[in-house]
Length: 460
View (cartoon, rainbow, N blue to C red):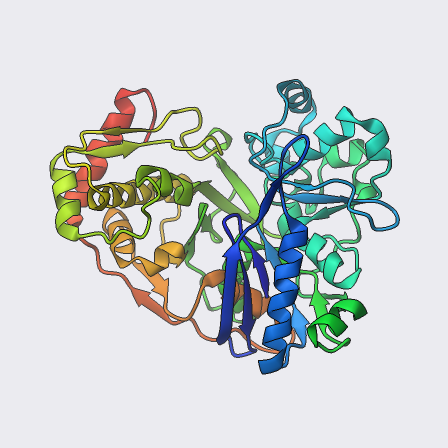
């Protein structure tokens, strides 16, 4: 599996039993293009091929599935040339183009995609480049979502897949399970390749890549999917095979903390609080709310994210009434437009900031879960699942059972379930229940934290 996240890229070897045999990762490389920040896909490609060369000596790799973050696309010419660097979704869109785009973007009820800042609506990126240089855009024959760019780069096959197309792009109508009216009117649909399932074989590994890495030329490259949807697939694929299994709500964590509720209706989502519907691998809308939790924690702790958290210090921080109030980034979330602030931190050490940061993550995660009415059991996956103190704080503020998956990272596990979709049933989940920590104090702190937001005119 090739997993390209916003902060890190990872290659994993996983077998049909859901066992991770090897993992390697690197900081996601970036570059500065003429007009915007971009991803350095050539460096990433070279790194990945180097890992394949080493891993192919030890493992029989017979398939590759690309998984990436969303809100990212590539423009290809008819002859397969990448026409410009692939834009970072945090790069700003010029205001003039953003205003013009807002005038044509579909209503939330049609796309279940809220208006988001910078390039987080992929449709806005496409609109900008189409309007800023029409002659350039005339050369664009294919528009590929980011996972399918890697599918193409590895196999030469052109595909489109629904989890990326339905990820707050404004290009998909989840309830109708088709392209949005705007995507049709703008003539962009003709530039999207054929829709295929995430588990479909797109093609075989390019011969030059196979020869350079020692892999077989018969190695399959699968269509691939969006990373949060891969994490979700770790539970919904099992339900698809066993209807008696009820998937829990999920909190997928990393750079983004994303709350997902597969069993919740999507008809009451609040667009102004960054609620939306993602689209799962089967094409079904899934209620979702999110915030950039990993980025916020980095800012609150001044980058000292590896600092251990002591429950006694967390208790002292709560007793002092210290709090971090949202938001600490400009990338959406349930508190858009509000500048983050830290109040009442009497002792400013890395340990105290770590405690404050984890309290913040617990409070805003709770908000996101409440916004999508995720009232049942909760599964925490990703970075947060490896931090027992944070999981225990989330368990304290929730009124439902909270679990982590002891088996593996949810994205990797879900990607494995998709990669072997026709050949193996995902292994039974190995959930471990999390005991609450300082529950009474955390519940009281939640009330105080919420009141502080209300006093600033912001609902909690």
